[in-house]
Image (cartoon, rainbow, N blue to C red; front, side, top):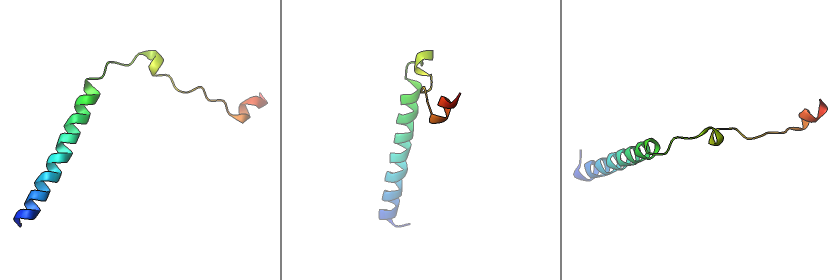
Length: 51
């Protein structure tokens, strides 16, 4: 492998690895969600009016 190709590969693998570690750390350090944050949207569709 040529030196330029090796440098590009090391830079890209390093960047993706750092991004992955940052994302995992961000998810694991978030405060735990409460029940009020975990509810889904209150959906109302037109077919619900028929009842």
